[in-house]
Image (tube, rainbow, N blue to C red; front, side):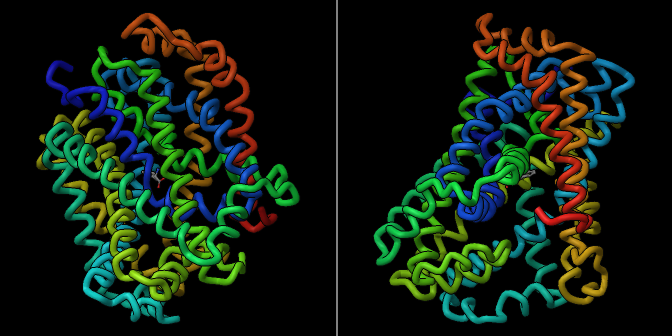
Length: 451
Ligand code: PHE
């Protein structure tokens, strides 16, 4: 592929990949999981998993992409024809996620607009969020707008669009996150929340903690859906792969950690130490936090900054989802970027409408208590992602062999410091854990037992 687009340098690559990794998962999911599953212990477990398990899979994916210079479908196929199907499965994941992720991105845009136009108080009303998502047309409008932003960046291409946007948004996101966390820590009653977040509470730790941390790690690092393969295919051979992976992981984990600092103490201060306020799941971001902001001094400003940073996080993730799909179509059919981008955007708009309507007019569609959006989330994250990750390990560990990846990592300076660990992880430990995750998340999604 001589004219394949490229990130201009290592920083561009790392920030774009971190842009993909840092998303809604870091900001609302990580904090409440950490609070729920043992505080400091969860943080520690997460960290250990990130530098072993996360490192292994991310290195494998980026190396597969860079080695073949192809997006997910082509990359597997180029190395072994029998694994074509794995590439296809990997791409089905972003095709499912992209539409509903953009529906949620639309909600974020709506909240940002409400806060910046002085609607903080209104948004704290008890039924504000449910009224909004159950309406037929309004959420679709915001969804369209979010999708338009995403599509514009992807249409501008890898270097001019994705890289430039990431280079601007990611540093800004870090600064805004730090501002809010510092402010949150000054609130009265926040210190208890801080202690609760950081102190290990062993009674809440069990096998479930590891599974929860592992599931979160996957989603958070954008693994097992062809994204890192695609971004890897745009990486230069002269940029160091191993240290890039370390930096992406560090970025992703740091933002998740800071998001906890931003949210948990503030929620504690607001609820007078009532932890159950943290267990609101998705409602945490759209129901509890607006109430928290409405109750604090400078709440409108803080709320506006918060939703702006969440918007940046969601946008850079959505871009990576869309780019992965676009790049597959471009590789496969030889289409031009402009045509492919528009095609994918229209397709995703059509696919996203049912997810959006699932809280209102299509509310009657439900499966094991899940709405359309939840079903999409379940199929992609709990079923397909572990399957793809499992077979990626088998593929690398036993079919092409880990040496192929190691050689790619060594392209720059002949070194792969963590090679020993990589080999053991990819062949034995990762597949074993992935298998357990798959079985347990499918079982709990189907209501066979509750995790
Ligand atoms: N990694 C993103 C997050 O933490 C989520 C994501 C998943 C982004 C899949 C892109 C693709 O929110």
